[in-house]
Length: 262
Ligand SMILES: [Zn+2]
Image (cartoon, rainbow, N blue to C red; front, side):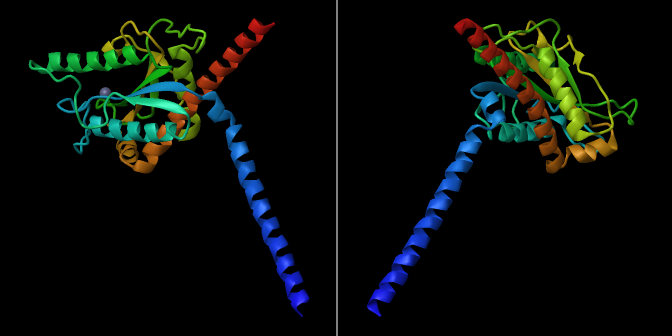
């Protein structure tokens, strides 16, 4: 009887050990799978500056219901930060609260200039792989106009160091525009455009884009822009475009290393 119980106990122990081994194996397998995830590898060690437009005294554009651009800009930017932090990307925000940067005494015009100059100072100091400024559009003359559009500064802003290879603002802008078209599918076919009349784009020292995420003047789009779920969707779409270019960058880098070794 005792022998039989012992045999059963030994048999159960073998089963328990087998189940534990299988669980451990599948867990490690998953982790290994996660490590070879292409997107994570591609964005490895990238540095991105997110600049939520306006803030504090500067509300930016405002909708008919009083919704201020600065608030939605910040909400979308925080969602974008959250998305990027799922990857090994270092994110630097120009603001995380409802504040203006470098507030100074003086008239509104000079205060705005100070604020924008401070944002540029941060970008120039950090020298990120990309700086992305988040804004909303407003076109009261025609409330039917809607859709997201991406802008980039004039000229070729390249990162020419061997570490990061050459990618231009235009590359990023076009990829983000395409991703917005696919993922937001608002029926709008727009192309990324050059923009020269804003301070933040003056003589850029690294790739930069500005995303106008939608129109406050369009009622339907305004309703969507206020929803966290839509803001998250925008954030994912923006990230996907950025990541596509970071991937290309990685590919180029590997080619250079490869040819150097030959
Ligand atoms: Zn704006």
